[in-house]
Length: 416
Ligand SMILES: [Zn+2]
Image (cartoon, rainbow, N blue to C red; front, side, top):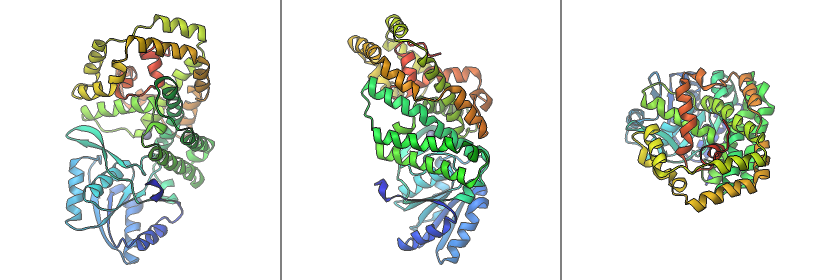
């Protein structure tokens, strides 16, 4: 399916977009933008499309914070009216998700015209949405194409590029966590996809200086990396190649902001800062000898079902049942299964060390983030120390995945 996604990131992206629409007989278009993205790209694109003979309508979303929720879904539908049009999302994360959602539910075509290299989700089929106050990823559709104008992307606010870079740095953690998941929890793993993500993030890091300068070369490398990461998720059929413990910490904090009716913090900015924490776990892991690990494993006690229930009820009120169901494979691990898991960790300590060695140090990660103007500390993003501690302590419960923090929470390896 994803082979069909047409990708163009480069100069004058409106030209290949026009050609694409002509070739595919997409004559009636619906642009979705907000005030910022209209000024940055929507106005120019709309004029060019009209001059090229297309029938163009525009849904201009208003508000302090554009969220992929019912209010905006309905607004785009009302602006479109009862007619078939190809939707073009002119914007970054939320605008693209709103457009993805509405286009899918009206059986319409959808094209992404990103205005910032801020996330890796442009090619995704899922739309992270807020429905009745709860965040969930609604399965929708991938775009027919992604057309990114490098001059528009390079002119985006630096915090947007810092977010994209943070999302990319998280891949170092995600890839190592994925290998741990395969080794210790039998998760399916694809080495070729893993390598592709690794190459993508390494290329971004090589260009960290250019990204900090928002040069076209730097932003091109960043956007190419984000797109590749998105395609890898499509090829893997899940987010595992691009999302590990760092994304779970970020996801936890995202939910808390939503529940507290506080404004969102850019996804990749949180992921970047959370990656520094998780790189710290791998730092610590590298210092533990096999003999010491065995001592710690011997002391570890399997958490009881009651402990899981108590922690989940405390951290995730309102969605306890969902979290419990997700976590059930860990909760229902038998005593023998738990002993086997600990034995597996001891037996594979050299391999675990090799995985840990693939992760850059937390200090290095923090330096890269600082270089692009990203935050290295979640408390600097407005979260209290208690909120960060809660995210660090409980976010491993959000997924049935064996990430690095399971070594500590489940198996007693001291990573803090
Ligand atoms: Zn992400």
